[in-house]
Length: 337
Image (tube, rainbow, N blue to C red; front, side, top):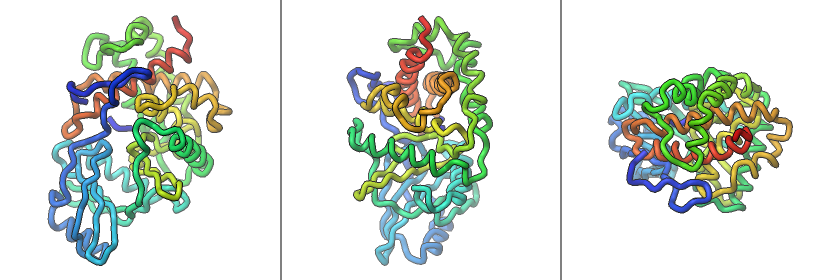
């Protein structure tokens, strides 16, 4: 999952203010070293005449739609060791997963990947689509929720060899345990209508979180980072899912659960209204769902209190806003006073 700026207005579920944007500091296509740009053109068999930067998404590198001299198109993602040294490995993981996804998965096809001198360049087919409208429009949300159900069905059993969620996200999903060990240190809860409740129950939340790995077990290939900025809607009603570096094995309801805090934060319905009536949750064990939700909530809140990573100035505000939406849902599910 994607691992924020003080002047941003945070949106609380049911409150006022625009949600923080999902946006990194993009580099232009010309920032890619010339040998790699030539490699892209050689692979495409044509010269790049235009590169239009796409602002959405948490990456501090290049993300651009390429237009070729002969009218062809492609989409390029590229990142080097600066400004965020963790980003190249994330792109490498995405390349491995994207190369193995079957053609039946609604994701842009990986055309090529280049890894040289610390730079990683991914070349995809260009999908003519746009992210869902913000705030969420009911018809588009219904379309996406249908796609989530379709993904869970078509990706069970998983067609790609990836780690289990407990392994992939072991370091990320320790938020409550970190906060319980140092309640006033980095990652402190801050404000919000449910912060006092969380402080009263820190030890219980840390204990609940500790069981999330087993609770999330399953044989479904989960994207593990579904949000509006990782979705593309096409004019003919299809939904494409992009950015797969965190893919892992999990329960079929894992993607739905991790997506819903962002939906609520971006003007959609409360998570429980969607989750409880969605087909992928029909056979979900309630205790398992609550344990995984606790881990997701702790991740967002603890990480949201840290300094912004290089090149990702809005990430922490985005995480905090998701964390507050998730925390309201978690309090509802536990029933703790």
